Length: 83
Image 1 (cartoon, one colour):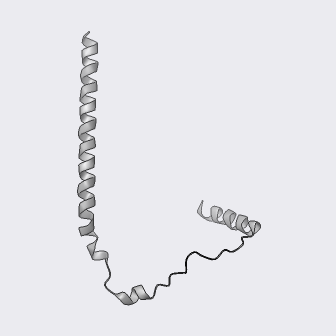
Image 2 (tube, rainbow, N blue to C red):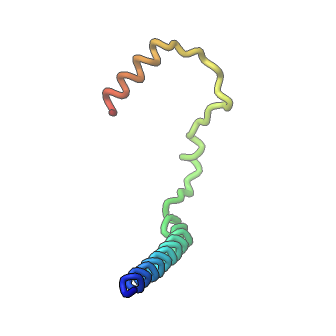
Image 3 (cartoon, one colour):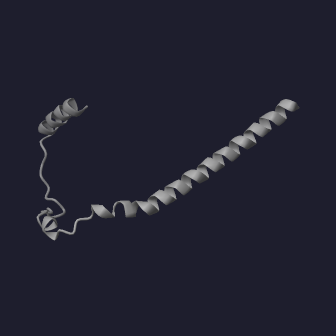
């Protein structure tokens, strides 16, 4: 009987601890996500000339036929280099 009560108390404290930690985590994420915009506001560039130099390809891209042997060789070499 005493063991049951002890186990029951451990489960209750474990649940309480879990819920407490989950609440702290959610609150931390909410605070971090709301303050993240303030931290990253200095990353914006006001220079429109650098943005105009970017060339965006027309979409959807045209279809090009892929040679399976060339694709296999490129995939193999890429895997050997990068892992």
